[in-house]
Amino acid sequence: PVRTGDGLSDSEREDDKEGKTIYMVSDGTGWTAEHSVSAALGQFDHCLVDHGCSVCTHLFSGVDDIERLIEVVRQAAKENALLVYTLADPSMADAARKACQLWGVPCTDVLGPITEAISSHLGVSPSGLPRGAGGRILLSEDYFQRIEAIEFTIKQDDGALPQNLRKADIVLTGVSRTGKTPLSIYLAQKGYKVANVPIVMGVELPKALFEIDPHKVFGLTIDPVVLQTIRKSRAKTLGIAEQDLHNYAQMGYVKKELEHAGKIFAQNPSWPVIEVTSKAIEETAAVILRLYSDRKQKRSLPSISKRY
Amino acid sequence: PVRTGDGLSDSEREDDKEGKTIYMVSDGTGWTAEHSVSAALGQFDHCLVDHGCSVCTHLFSGVDDIERLIEVVRQAAKENALLVYTLADPSMADAARKACQLWGVPCTDVLGPITEAISSHLGVSPSGLPRGAGGRILLSEDYFQRIEAIEFTIKQDDGALPQNLRKADIVLTGVSRTGKTPLSIYLAQKGYKVANVPIVMGVELPKALFEIDPHKVFGLTIDPVVLQTIRKSRAKTLGIAEQDLHNYAQMGYVKKELEHAGKIFAQNPSWPVIEVTSKAIEETAAVILRLYSDRKQKRSLPSISKRY
Ligand SMILES: Nc1ncnc2c1ncn2[C@@H]1O[C@H](COP(=O)(O)O)[C@@H](O)[C@H]1O
Ligand SMILES: Nc1ncnc2c1ncn2[C@@H]1O[C@H](COP(=O)(O)O)[C@@H](O)[C@H]1O
Ligand SMILES: [Mg+2]
Ligand SMILES: [Mg+2]
Image 1 (cartoon, rainbow over the protein chains, first blue to last red):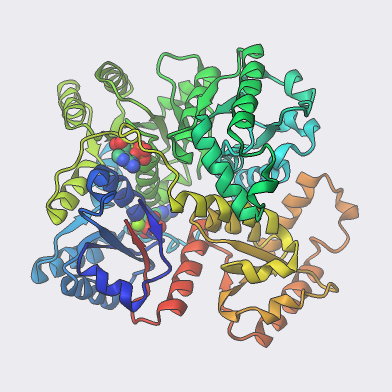
Image 2: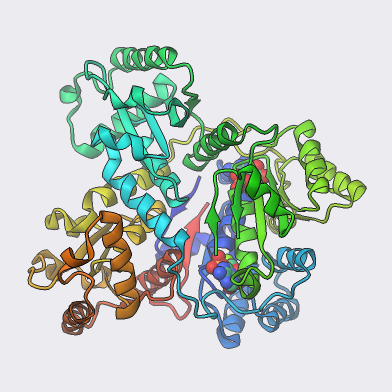
């Protein structure tokens, strides 16, 4: 039920008064606060969907001086907003808490509790420096790996250069509009080189797909009715007229093509097949990475591990 | 200082005993817990960099039954780990807390506090249902917008089809290796259609760049020494030998090309120029979106607003 806005027009701002407002404030990008708020809002889907409790969020990033912080809190007070903050400098976090108390703004500190827990776990004090303040330069191995993964994945999109399937960490395959591209990009951002191979009836699959390590291949499948809806919308975006659609979004064809994919999957039983119908991109990504690390680790509790 | 691992080998697992361990558990994808932990770990950069306090994280996603949850907590106890969890079902969150108490595992609830704060703000009880349990189907307007933005951005990459600059929400320009591609992709995931136009000495820029709304164009610049390092690494990846590098990574050329870009930026004073040298991709993205919404809203406190 999310609608992304680039700021609200005046008429939309009026509507605010009907819904509740959440302010998010960070001395950094604000993405951490946004991510947590959006996960928590998932717990209110039952009333968000029917607008029983419509919510408007405002994200203030780069708030690294006390004056701007106070201005944001004052504005939150005016709009009866909830304030969610991530402020690395303890004096800023303190100021936020106190200003909220003063003006009766309910507030939640997203960074403090977890930083404290980590601090006592490590036996090390937090720096209190906001992101970027350390002046660190980002040419780590990890930085280059991520960039390389993104560039690889973009170039590989839609089955280009089958000889490169060998170089991919993960290979996705499925019929058109099962979400291979956005999923590939999502995984690439996490540092994995992803290639994807479309399954199209009457088009032979690249031989390389059957020659590479089958443990890195994942099949995607989807409910035919949902797929048809997506394809119709796709056709509209592309400006294809209804009568010119031929097979692409016809139910008979959609079903046959999914069956065709199903047969290929059955012939390659070591490819896990993931049903994407009611999954968000990040959910499918989580399932794939869970299976991926499971296959690599062969432990009873597969996990994605990172070293910092 | 992050190294992404696909599970650890046995010899790496040995090293664990030298550093501290953080377990992350979610009934969903685990990305929220991971994002919070990684932001909080930023507060310990001062000792992570020199490995004074090395940390290994393990992410357990899709933990939606009590048996697996208890197994993870038990394992955390064995490894003396800190446990960070996001569990929507209150009885699961309770079980995590109690099991941690029983086995002396320090733990932090990342979802509970913010969900409670939102609950009292909205005056609505949380569903207690993990992500995906609602069986919702994701064909929202927002879903299609995000997919379209990603596909647009991939197709536009690297200055392809200048006539499409008009259709972009955001246009990035800068010399090679200022990070236009990964930044474009990051913004696309947030729902913005991004085009990027490389600045190369001796190559004319597309006319369209100067004809579109200048308020959506952003210049990227970078320190020449850092750029040279990135280009050298790039050249290695591409397998270009040192002597064949010609100009690309030569300091004299790098400086001249940055000056050339600087002149173009000076001639287009309404394009903000962003220094990316010590910024992570998501930091540059935050700066751009802050300026972008500032230009759209013309309010004293620019914010990125969303409606749920
Ligand atoms: N690498 C980092 N170093 C220091 N602090 C960080 C780092 N990453 C995130 N933070 C802090 O964590 C909070 C959330 O970051 P952000 O998601 O950028 O809003 C902010 O208070 C940041 O200052
Ligand atoms: N759309 C959603 N609906 C319900 N719960 C959600 C939603 N998104 C995230 N959550 C919950 O928020 C926590 C973090 O989600 P995740 O980032 O997927 O681990 C988990 O407990 C999820 O169950
Ligand atoms: Mg934040
Ligand atoms: Mg989580």
